[in-house]
Length: 381
Image (spheres, rainbow, N blue to C red):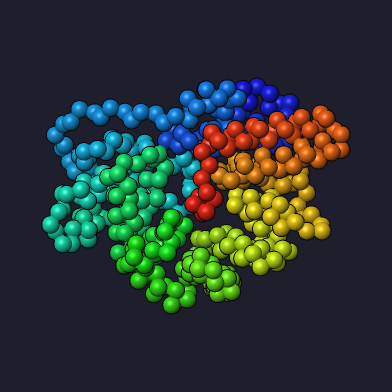
């Protein structure tokens, strides 16, 4: 097994050794996080496939007559306890609700949206008023549902309705979250058709020009259309608006890292290698996973007369990205180790070559077990 010989491995696996030492504690619901795969990884392929296989859903508990709305649940939804909503990362930024309150809102909304208020035109506003729920509460509960693990179809629909509800009630972050989900999804060209009301509110925010997150998403929309100059101008404008807001005491730029990474990608696309390097470097030094990946692979994508990132540092950056869960990082590490293997063979260093070859194979095995997704569909921010 991987964990048995980590102590004799070189630098890239020392980070993995930290994870295997027991200091990482992924939540029980996040059974397919990168840390879990790294900790449980085995060179025995049959055992690896067995661990990666989905576990059967638990049998539903016997039906009983509910005593309150919060205790009842629609058919096809597995029971959730308040403990399921405890934060895996304490003091997570932006999350303020106690897990018991989150569970109460989740249970009540699930039943209300599933038919309790069918036929009532204003059921949403009445439900929020009756239960003293603010728009930002709907938004937080919807985001925290993502930590529950696999969601049923009813839960998925309720999660989307909660975001829509928060947006309808005037919560700007919920509106922007809906737009961002579509932009980074499978059909960004269908943005206006997918969420017409949220899109209309988004256009208002962009026209006002005071929300850097809205300007960032507008820049991403232009980038997807291939209009690079307009996209870069919007990203720079978002940074300027955020900087001006800080002067006046505001710090509301949730997707600052996203803005900088997208700007660096545009600079890279037009051949501005040094400018892209500076943007990636600033974010990577702050621990941003996507920036670590792009900085670690910059020389592979844009080879120059002078290497901007040494191979040893590139390996550290990509390992950091892999530990943070960036899906393309293990494959990039395998490619890097393969290149170092070829160089070691050319230099006649047989022992070093054997180590690089083994590392490359281990990273490829981990990437396969991890069931990598396309980086563009991976939510980092």
